Length: 145
Ligand code: FES
Image 1 (cartoon, rainbow, N blue to C red):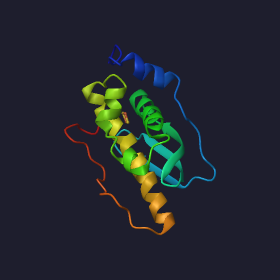
Image 2: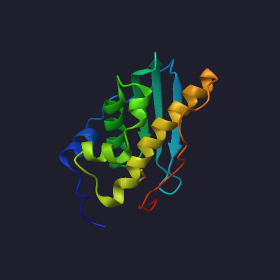
Image 3: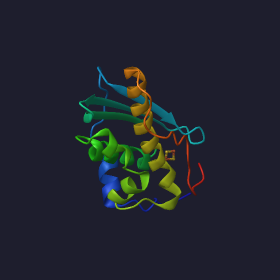
Image 4: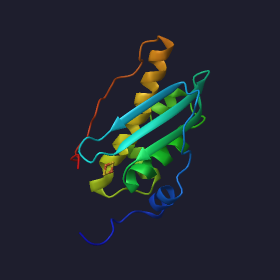
């Protein structure tokens, strides 16, 4: 293989200078998801107060698109209510990044899953039912590479 994938400037920006990297020691919810095929792993930490995501951090061991989408998701959900955060789809994240090459769309799914997994953990820790559908690991029309 030669050449680089045609990443947008925003993807390159978030990949080389990711926002909100790290951990939250007293997180309200933590989610870890992985893609068993490529081996990439994403861990997301949420701090929630009064139904608002007041802080979010992530650690991603993965490809450039996975790092960039995690970074963008954290920027998009910070300060939002849980309901607003759940409405942010992987497609919206990819669009906010100026698009992703089709072969990399599945990496944005990982970011959405990590967020949902952290929210599930939050509700579980609160002893509350999870008020959204568990979409599980979806790939839409992309193959898991
Ligand atoms: Fe595995 Fe991008 S998340 S290749």
